[in-house]
Picture 1 (cartoon, rainbow, N blue to C red):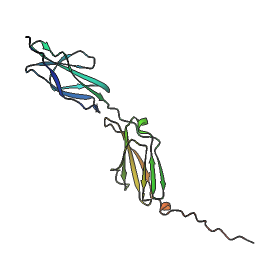
Picture 2 (picture 1 turned 90 degrees about the vertical axis):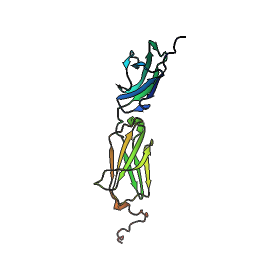
Picture 3 (picture 1 turned 60 degrees about the vertical axis):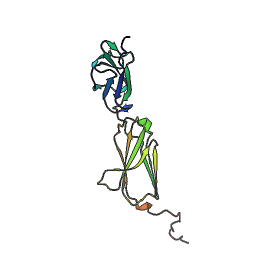
Picture 4 (picture 1 turned 45 degrees about the vertical axis):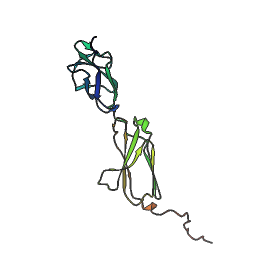
Length: 197
């Protein structure tokens, strides 16, 4: 009975989506003393060894490896599929802030239109400190703050990110203290000058 061909396994590789133009794979064979041949996408197989590091353009890719032992080749190559994405999203557009008494609404354009999947909003309460406290993370296009302190300086930083972890340029929105909004307007009429008769 002829010996069984070796069985090839890939033990590690990149995650399904990665913000990198290189990928490293480790692989092995069920039979000691095997050699290996690797291929990327539709390229021809070439001799390789584990670990193997390759460079790739953005897009979906498949890495194949086969083990060879004493002229017997694994008939079913091991395969690994992943997507390389090194392109950051664009900065969010159409950002807008509406301030009322103890209420602030921060709006921005859809993350999808910027090539992103989610948005993070950071906050700072000082002109000398960059925004660092996270107050929102999600796929929406607005954030509402109730109980907003109208007499305090606030700076918000909006950053879009994609599934690979790429981040967009930051967009900062400054909300200056407003003494006009420290108390609600009761709608009372202001007395005018007396009428002359």
